[in-house]
Image (cartoon, rainbow, N blue to C red; front, top):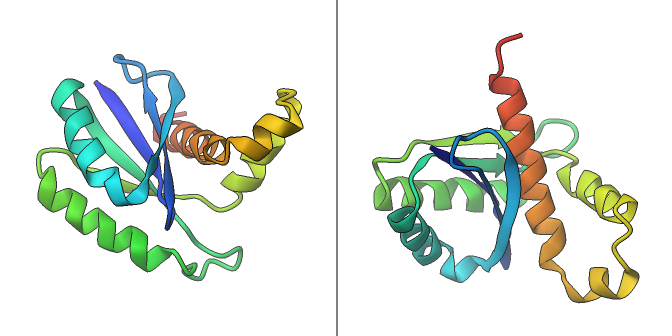
Length: 139
């Protein structure tokens, strides 16, 4: 079953998801945060999702970021709306920096980067999801 990941933001939220086997993460889309809960209810009604991972925003020193209370409050709404799907958190420090770097290395043109503000959110969600999956692997 799929694992879905959210890079929750005040205005926009990046969404990434694995393939149906739960092995390969990929960016899904960026959703206006005000419509996120409705989007997730609709998506999980169409697709089997075994878990939702939310990036937990913290400062480099480990202290909560300004966005962390919003993330935690949304997680509670999400758990109430979709109680059958577990919600986990994963440290999202530096994912935006890594996403910007990945976009530049992929050769995305400057105009597209400027126009598609959600691209960083989607890539960040994908990086969080891959990191979460890597951390779950027994080595």
